[in-house]
Image (cartoon, rainbow, N blue to C red; front, top):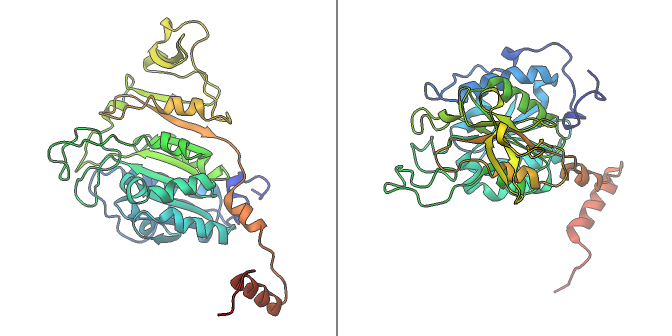
Length: 349
């Protein structure tokens, strides 16, 4: 594989000289999550995906914040930064700007990214920094033992909401689309093939990619996504260029009503020509936002899954680097730096 054949998201990242496998990307650290945690499945899938990308371990960096998911860098034989609560996108932005030869990943959770880290997340997406964000959503604070998170449903009784949560939860995909993210997707820990396919598409995208991963917390929020499993589940797969149908034998569909809104109903009863055909590459994020709005925000019984949006925009780090010119002579570089520090406006007091 040459640089010309690499997906644009990895353009400029050096390739490995020899063949790698999953074991090459696994560290020697004992993996310490609760038995049955969905993080195990995500980790195994990720370790299996990286060798397929063909890039060097030393040109891969994983930045995490604080939370159960943020232990991820310890278990990867790559470079990693276990940063501070909510600030992983900020650190990843600096790395991506300074080192275009790196594949930069952010691993975060619904609490880390959407609560204390909310501003950092939306601005990384708005700026379209070339990073890939994996947001593990278990709808609970797991590391601190079961408090309500920004994605917990109204009425949820937790240690921090003993009489039931009164806050409306975030729709993570809708939030990302509202921030102008150029790649937004959703997948699940229990669907390893779909998870791997989605992450490969995300890292291949040049710009900020956000992948929300529904992840089961067996200890503090077990079964939160059970209704999305099985042939008759409420999982609505989104495939670019394909009609949005789901359920056993495609018995259910998403269609456009006469009033112009989206609705879900039996496929054989949808008006002719009304079934939505998904277009992930549509510049206008309107359809993606409408599909995101079909997500249950209470007890989840229905949820679209797949790539909602994938469009090409200039990236923050490419544009920032294009502004920088550097003289060859060290003295000239120092003088230029001094000019920037001094600035055009000075006063003598």
